[in-house]
Image 1 (cartoon, rainbow, N blue to C red):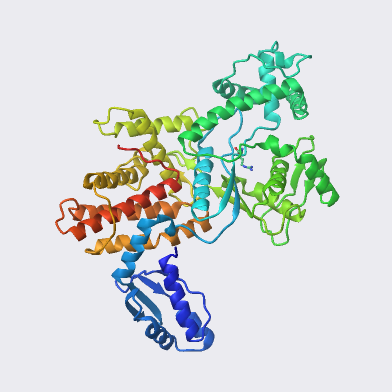
Image 2: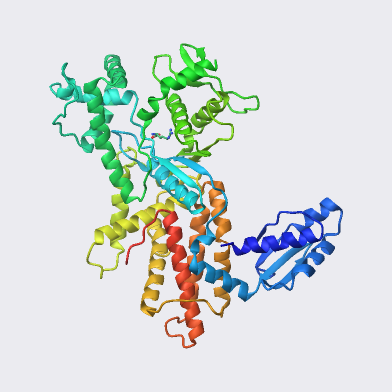
Length: 577
Ligand code: ARG
C-alpha cells in the first residue's frame, strides 16, 4: 500500500513535469501550522536554476493541482513556499488505511542486508551499564532495520578469547590443581566441576591483578593462553565450561531486556579465520614490521588527528583486538556478504574501528561497496557526571541497576495489584531504563536519575506504558469492534492525525541517524496529544454514534501504533500497572 505523503509528492512532481521541470519532490510538516499542514520548499531552487520568478512558478503549480481532492487549501507564502492543508477525506482515508495495516507508516525501500554487532559482553566479566547501552541501542536499531524492510543478521560478539582467559584458567588451576582438566592424560571427558557465574566474577579481578603484578604469573598465563589457542584438551574443555557458565547469565539478563541475537559468536570464532586472513594480507604485501610488531599503516593524507598504524601482532607476540576485529570482518563478509556492517560500542572505541575499517578497505579484503558503520554512543553517568559507578567505585553491574530500578517501580505499582508484582515491576523497570537510555541522541552522555526515569508524569517509559495501557482499557470498556473513522470533530484530533502522518519521516530519520531519540520524542508527543484529547472528550458516553465510533477507532490506531513503536524500542507492555 502506498504511503499517502509519497502520493502527494508524486502528484506535485507530476505537475512540475507538465510545466517542464524534472524534480524530486519532498514535502515536510509545516513549521507554521497556522498557514498549512505541510509545506513544499522546492520552488525557489527550481526557479533559480531556470531563471524564473518563483512566485509565478508557484502560482502555476498551485493552479494545476489546487482542485485535487487531497487538498483543502494551497497558499503561497514568502518568496514562494507552498503551504498545503489537507482535506478531511484525505486524512480520514490515511487513518483508515493505517487501521488496516499500520506497517504502511514504517516500510521504506532500503532492502539491504545489514549485519549488526552489538552487546559485546566479555566472558568471566561482569555485564555492566556500558554493555546495557550497546545491547539496548543495537536491539532497537535492528528492529528499525526490520520494520523498514531490511534483512538483518545480529551477532553478540562475545569477548571470549585472549590473555585474560589464560589468567582466569591459571587462577582456577592454582586453587584446584587436582582437577581432571589439569592432568597429563586428560582427553576431553566430562568433569564434575561446579563453577558458577559468581565464582567467575570473583575470580576475574584477582586473576588479572595477580598477573599484572607478577611477571612470572603473567608468563604462565601467556603460556596457558597459547596452549588454549592450540586447543590443548584440558585448557580447552575448561575454557568451554567458563564460556558456558558466563553465557547462561548473559542470556538470562538479555532475556529480561528483550534483546536477542541470531548468532552467538565470539572472538574465538573469528580467531579461526586468522591464518587464512594473514595469508591473504601477506599476499597483498600490506603488513609492515615496526618495532617488533606487525602493523598495517592506515594514515591518510587528510587526517587531522593522529592515526597510528593498526597493530596486528604486538611485539610480545600477542594477537591484538584489532586483528580479531579484522578477522571478524573477514569471516562475516565471506559467510554472509552483507551490504552493511554496523557496530555499537562506546564512542571511545572510535579510533579502533577507524583503523580496522581502513585496513579492511586498503587490503581490498572487502568489496568496495560494503558500508562499515561505527555507531559510538555516550556513557551513562552517575550524579557526579562521571561514568556510573557502584558505591565502592566499581563499574555498575547491569544486574544491580535493574534490581534498583525494579524496586523503585514496585513502590509505584497500584496497591490493588497483588499478583506478580515483582514481574510487573521488572517489566516497567526495563521500560524506564530503556526509554531513558534511548531518549538522548546516541552520542550524548546522560545522567542516571532513578526518580526522573520512573516518574509517571514525565517524558518516561513509565508514562508511556501507563498511557498505552489506559488506551487499551478504554477499548476494552467500550467493548465494540472498531471499523472506521468517519468524522474529525475537534482540532486536536486533526493534530493527532497529522502527527501520525509524520511518522514515516521520523522512522527514516532514525534509521539514517542510527539513533532512537526522535522515535522516543515522537512517542511522547503523540501520547501527549492523545491524552489531551482523552481529557477533553467523554468518549464512552458520547451520544453521536459517528463521533463515538470515530474516537474509538482513533484510539485503536494510536494504541496499535504505540505498541508497534514500543516494540521497536524493545519495550514490553504489562497488562496493568
Ligand atoms: N567486548 C568489547 C568490550 O567490552 C566490545 C566488543 C565490541 N565489538 C567489536 N566487534 N569489537 O569493550
